[in-house]
Length: 156
Image: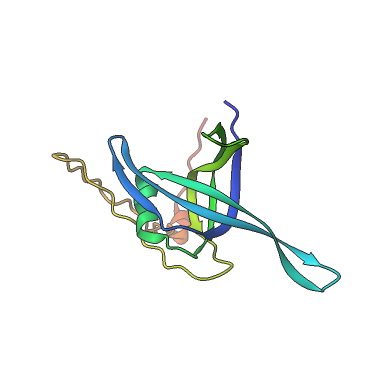
């Protein structure tokens, strides 16, 4: 299926709204994305048009958005763009909405710093499975003198 995947950089315009739904957690907020351009005549950066997107996050991303995102913070959002149009009562023109079904969301580190904390994964009830830690140490190299003293093996 063809989808329009976008990556936008902007500022959080509204407080994230978090909800527990039957099919899992969901969060949404508005993101303001303002184009900036260099005005050669004035020799300054100038703000252009601002687009507003409703960003939707689901499942663990929604939980993390609720714990991490605040109004005014700069974000980078990647996801599927969905533009909806509909006619509303008493209006002559169609109403349009641009939504992003987010796949990933992060703070824009060109404009500040962040401290990452891994979120705790919920455990499945009644099932605790422990896996042994992998052996990360590199084995010591074989003694090169012992290898030189060994007689070669002839394979025919």
